[in-house]
Length: 296
Image: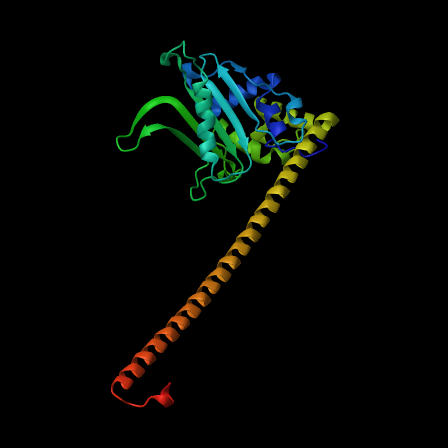
C-alpha cells in the first residue's frame, strides 16, 4: 500500500463494516463479537445507514455508527469511539434506548420488541483499573444472579487492553488485532493472523483508501479534522486550567481581603471597647471625688 491507513478512522471504519460490498464483514464481526452459534448465527443483515462518503465531506466530525438488523429482526449498532469522557456511558445507554424505543409505535405492543445489541470499540481506556478488553453488559440482578431480560446487550471492546502479541484464540480477537495492527501491515506480505478470507477483504478496503486518490484525500481530511478538534480541545483545556488558576488566585485574594477586613473590624471594636471602659473608669473616679484631670 502507498499510504498507511488506520482502520479506526471514522470514514474507513464505516466503509469496512457499514458498506453493502462489505456486508459479509459486518456479519462476520457481529457473530464473532457477540458469540452467536448454531441456529442463532446471523446469516444476513440489512444495513440501515449504509456508508456514504458524502456524510464525511463537511467541516464537522459527526457521530458515525453502523446500524443494522438481521434475519430475525434483531437490531445492531456498532460504533468506534476514539475519545473517552465522563458522560460516555450515559451516551452509550441513551443510544441503545433510542434504537430500542424506535422499534414500535403507539399502535403496536411490547411483544413486538426485539433485542438490541450495541457494540462500542474504544481506543482509550474507559475502565482504567481493569485489564479486561471485552465487557458485556445486560439487565442482571447481581445479588440473585438472574437476568431480567436478554433484550439489552451492550458490549465494549477496549482496544488499549488487548495484547496484539498474544496468540489469537478466536475471531473476535482476530478483529481486535486487525484494528490495532492493520495500519502497519502490507496486504502483499500479511502475517498468518490476517490471512483469512475476511481479513484479506478488510485489508483490500484499506488498500482502496491508500491507493485511490479520492478516498485517500477523504481519509486525510478526516485526520485533519480530528487534529483540529484535538487542538481545539487542548486549547479549551488550557483555557480551563488558566481560568481555574485565576479563580484560585481571586479566591485567595478575596480571603486575604476578608481577613484584613475582619482584623480592621476587630481592632475598631477593641478600640471602642477600650474607650468605653476608660469612660466608665473616669466616671467612677469622679463620683468618688477623685480629680481625673490628667487622665482625660
